[in-house]
Length: 172
Image (cartoon, rainbow, N blue to C red):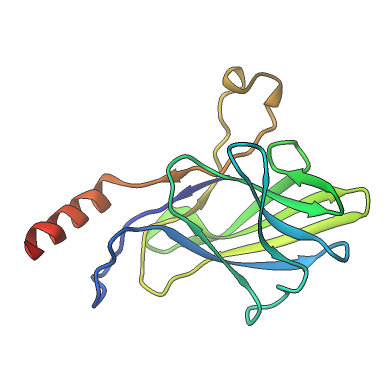
């Protein structure tokens, strides 16, 4: 699964310094004590939320600002189950009306010996934007035995760069 950061469709009253795709993460179901987050580039689990984040009111905030990527995962006990180790899958829904090639919702499922853990990510749309989640299957030769790897990539569009550049020049 990949992420397009996108660009704003309408100018907000306060122009942000940078752009990211922000999402609300909710723990839908799974084993008691499950934690969720992502894997760092060093292979460490980075905590973002747990089984107490079960509704829109208790959702945790995920911000995807990078072009490098992130590997979503759950931690059950001492064991990590991630998209990259083949334990997880995802489905996408709710096409972005401003960019129908990306989606505003992602449902993730991780299979663990203690039961299935399910997460929901919903892109936040305080300001209309062209960003969202999309499917990105890298070519198998690059990944070798990791052919089933699903990574989240973040794409900053040239349009966003130009908007920021124009805003900075106007401010100067």
